Length: 344
Image 1: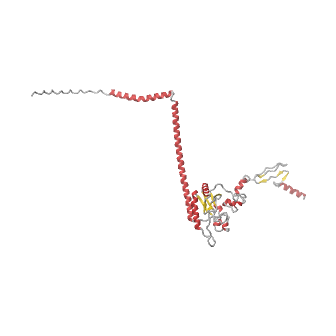
Image 2 (image 1 turned 180 degrees about the vertical axis):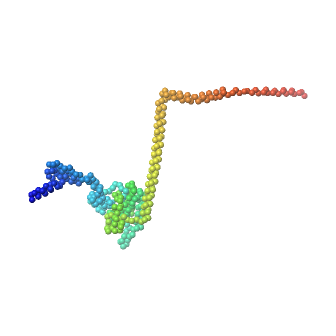
Image 3 (image 1 turned 90 degrees about the horizontal axis):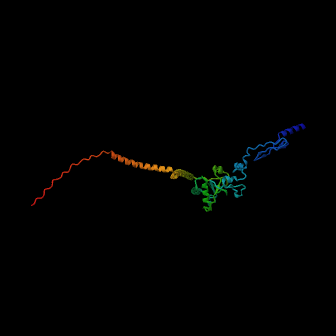
């Protein structure tokens, strides 16, 4: 028994865990952020530690991977995906409220018509179509719209919510600043930025298939369907916005080319001006020098030489001309004297 126990003890010591300690040094300790540490220096020296492959990710990287999921113990996943939480301010997790976004949430903007005399809800198709067309015309003034969704959930945190996603963040900012404090249907509008940009993740897929068992109290979005005419109008507005952007980009490119031409012309004018100034300075420096006097004398001789040449040519022509033979005119005949008048 003693021999078997001693053999097992030797085998156990040979396969010693890194969490055990003996005279060969303390075993390595595992840390979540730092990996496996090296053993302490014992009789035979301490061993080097092995680093975990995921240790470089750190806490921030881990939070980035689980952000908006159920594993995130800090941030509220429903508020991150849907922009609203049924617990409200009493929620134990953090609600991330962005300072700017493409998507604007207008809470409880759509109000259903009152129920009928029998207490049952009435059909509100026409009422909803008019409401959707009205807000589409108003919200399209602030920028090109990519999506406009109205919820038909019955929960207190989702009822009547309107989500509008603009193409740019500037459109969302204009919408928030313009609608804040205004009244619609007798209630004040309090729009806010939302983190929801992918409505496929936020919508209830079972509701799209008419199979949602929770009905109007589902915590995912039940996006109300719109008619073909409203979808066509929304596409038309998108097309107009794209054409407007193209025309603005063309005008910006033309103005950019015009500015480049103006800059090149101004550079040419500045270059010519510098050259003229440089020439004038050189002439001014050489005005009192001997070279300047010689140049002036040479210019004066060049100016007088053509005049002398003209005088010499005219005198040469006069000398070379043959003498004119003067023809003697015949003597004029003298008329005979008139006879004297006879006396009567």
